[in-house]
Image (cartoon, rainbow, N blue to C red; front, side, top):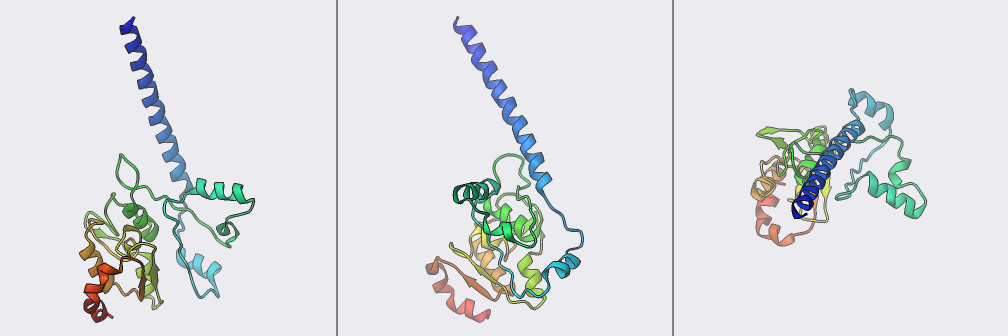
Length: 203
């Protein structure tokens, strides 16, 4: 009797694992299908972006399609992004096979359009990716990064640094000071007060 029960539990566990794997494969396929690739971004921007002086790239930490849908259902109206003239979607999964994407890899995907491994910022195994902020700055545009956390956090760093580890806060700061970003605004002041002279020296 006991042996039969153990066998039933084992079979149930195997079925559950199979279902989870199948669901993961299906969801991965859906995520990839959601990706939008613009072959000629320059022409696209000229056609739809004429006359606009400012761009605000806002990131809701952990926010996905389901969160937007839930908000719309609750309040009975479109989320403000639903009224945009142009919209697109990007996948933010990392190159890691197992486990969820972390903020470093997700921010890198949002900032550069390229995938990296969890924990890496603005690069993959030593190959650096140019971010939207760097492209804009290189074209003479003013660029600012504002965060509710310290600006050396993984998400703001994804737009302003290139390091193999999100924990390399010194390397992140070096990149941010040398990167041409005009404004950083965030919390964690105690980290930056001792570096006042260094920061001011970088302009």
